[in-house]
Image (cartoon, rainbow, N blue to C red; front, top):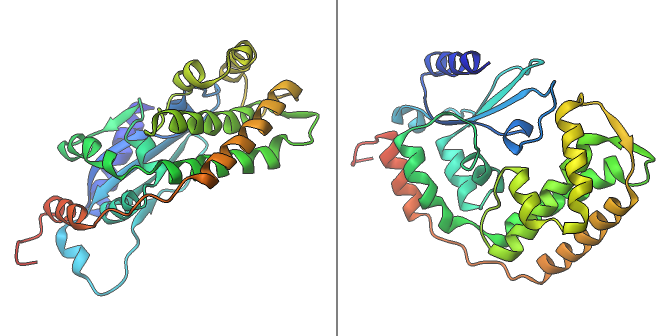
Length: 256
């Protein structure tokens, strides 16, 4: 599969006349709880020739391939990436912390320390809290049996919120690190057993609801929401550094 992914990335570069700056795994395989039939969620960042950014006609700032049973792959243009960094987009921080890297570049290596100053605890908390609340409401609340994977789709963002509240830094992508540092000790055996099942069972596996875990999720979401509501919005950073970085990477002449 690795060979197929790398070849697909090369084909995209050639077909679209782009340069890929980073390509990583972004889904359950990177989180550390993939099922045997989980697909591959590949995400990449790319840059176009500088003349493409001067065209009057509109152009998309994302590239998306048709989703197959095994491969889900899409990418963001550099200008979209930097605009999302300005807004402290949590997904972007996750991609740069993925433990599975398919392609990298000198830009990606320079970008990691640069982006840290744009991280907003408040925006990160809202992102993960919204993810936890919507998944809990849609897939866990009020059901006697639930899809096993949905517990992790709520647990992971809640533990990510706890990490942000304690450290004010982007949370790690791997679930095992969040489990060890952020989950209350009494629940770790329960979640560890669920994790073992998740790794060895199909994506559609259902399990009986776990009341004690549901109670923890509900109480955690309420506490996190109270905390984030009380947090002030951080002052916005300027665009100057992002503009400089963008122009240097696209290779635009100084006169532009």
